[in-house]
Image 1 (cartoon, rainbow, N blue to C red):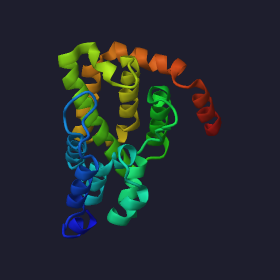
Image 2: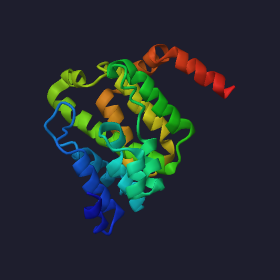
Image 3: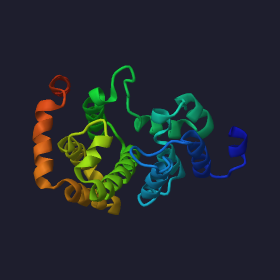
Length: 221
């Protein structure tokens, strides 16, 4: 693969080739859609906010560490430290020794903490691109499946998904000048409704790892 990519001029084109092979055969959860469609869409969304090819490359590659056998060292060797670090910022600690449904809320809270307190503008662009692509799919499939849709996810409570997507919007408000953010914010409300968003936020205060929230509060003191 590396020899093939050396003949490609653009780091973005290299990333598309690499990600397509890395995700080869994988499908989007609960569908027959090739997985690569999602990172390509994320890159297309990112391109409405930046034309920096390293950021667009990171958008295409954003799931290869999380969902394939690719290593951070391999990414750095092929695409450079900047791209590798951007992809690492988008990668959850899956805690594969525990059931995914057991760690879902902790993983999402960690991601939100990063976006709120640590992420730079480039990382936020990647997060918005990823989450908008996911939210478009949820909104579309909800029209067809109704509440059966939530059964395909590790977290099956739609209120918790509402909490997550609204919390992402709150964390990314400094991207509000972009059409992608406006689309995202509108889709959150259209997909979940104000009542579900409010109840999801209230539920998160009780159910999203109170011990984690206590640790975060202590760190801020």
